[in-house]
Amino acid sequence: MPRPQALIQMWNPYREFLIQQHRFYVSEASTRLMSQFDNINADADKAADAWLERRGERFDPDRDDEGAIYEEAESVAIEFYRQLDEMREQTRLSVVAGMFHAWEKNLKKWIVDELRRWGLGSHTIGVVWWADFPKIVELLGRLGWAVQDQSNFALLNQCRCVVNVFKHGDGKSLAELKRDFPQYLIDPINSKFGLPATEIEWLNHSHLQVTEAQVQDFSEAIIDFWRSVPENMYEQEEVELPSWFMKAVEQDLRARS
Image (cartoon, rainbow, N blue to C red; front, side, top):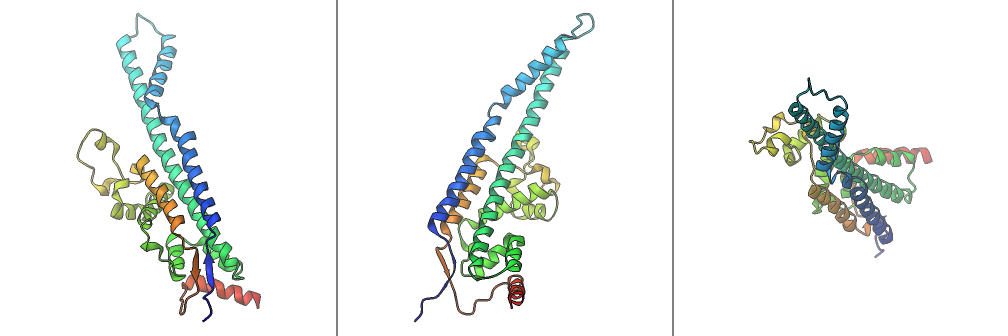
């Protein structure tokens, strides 16, 4: 009996390269980007001191209230801290978005590189690059690998939703996040002062937050994903590939003939 043909293959050295590349991104993002926010309390104090120095050059003992000036300097420190804290959250979300998009692009590149071995052309390659995450999951499932059954899938799906809300703001992805993954929507004022949680319906994209622990969870899910990719996905009897994919395949076959 002839051995079934491998439709898609994952070369182990390439797998290790993808994992190393991902780890480098996460490590350097932490070192070069997130580390800049390690001392924002001290940075806020420096901003207040600089403001006081500039204000002191215009100090008039006959008109100015020294206590009020120091209160204003404290307000400067609080506002500087608030803006740095917001920048830290946005930077962390940017790191997550970059991590997810790099993974998604590498995944699609691997798929299309394998499809080229089939002799397929630009239509098929194009629809894979245009396909969203659920379609890629569907395609891999029809080829014999049930991605949605992998232990890393839940976190990858959460990461996808977080990145979409970060990118697009309010919309379909925010509704999905509220319904399925509300832990990523945080009201900073209520959480800081121990007040009752804000009703989820009142939260929007501006309340999107991820913690360092959640970033690490997303990172490990991506590594687990690459580790779990089968070395070979073999040809199967009665494989029914997705209609959106087969339509492009037929276009390529017509163009070739």
